[in-house]
Amino acid sequence: MKKIKIYLLVIIAISLIFTGCEIDNYNEPNVFLTGSIVYNGEPLNLSNNEVTLQILEEGWELETPNYAYVNQTGEYSFLTFKGSYTLQFASGQGPFKPNQESISVELDGDKVVNYEVTPYYLVRSANFSTSGQNVAATFEAAKIITDASNTIQTVYLYVSKTSFVDKNTAIATATLSGGNITNENSISLNVDYPTLVPDQDYIFARVGIKISGVEDMIFSEVIRLDI
Image (cartoon, rainbow, N blue to C red):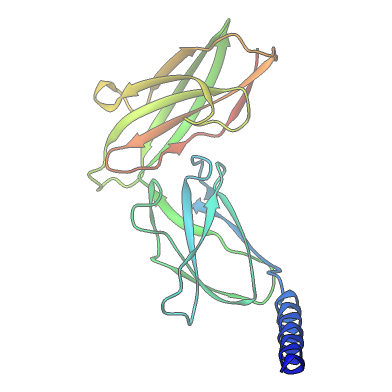
């Protein structure tokens, strides 16, 4: 009886070793799907990693979607396997309307796929200046979807010590409610920032628009300001 038990234990151990080897031999993802969220071919400036793109592998009805996070310059990157995929935004994602509900992609190698959208608003003609420990900004809030009921809720000026600039990294913030904007073609904001510790001779800034009924914001480019 003891010999039979030992024999069975050996068989089980060998089975576990081969199962482990099979798991170790699975291929790792080796195909990059990259691209940008664009309007008329130009990437949009967004809040870093707050807008997500859903990526679903076709042929799997109940598959949970994967998510690619979009960075502050509108770019995304996703590592996966070769196959057929569908790209789409979840309802309510982004300060824009997608130009098409979804995009089908056949991946047989690395591929760049841009997703064309139409933003509710764009930040245009943004200019920044510094005086002492004050940053001033002027810009235009250009309404792109003119038939939309969405209006400006608030505009923001963010100042940061790093090139990542949004509410999460700001060391100083100025706001102006949409109801107090008298001319969307010429909006002005300014804010004092604290003494920088450790000291540095530059800061970063950008302005953003929060649209009523839309969670995510649209921004200007990040600007480095020497101080």
